[in-house]
Image (tube, rainbow, N blue to C red):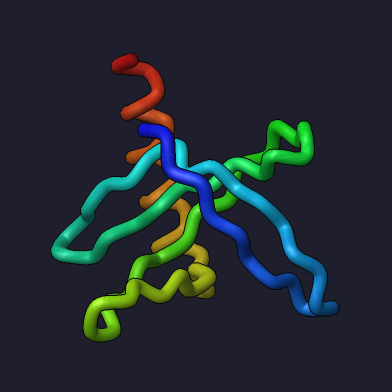
Length: 79
């Protein structure tokens, strides 16, 4: 997967990411983004469909985040 995306941070700065994985759990889609600034700390977002444009939403629920993280790590182990 070689998709790039730019997100705007809380203070208005642009941050470039590569989407390194996407997966679905119980009909909910998730995307894992890796900053292109050299950081190795990936971020997991919930993907909400809004017409033709997907919206990336932070995962606020700790249990949901844990579940998404576990699925992501399992995917990485398979590669």
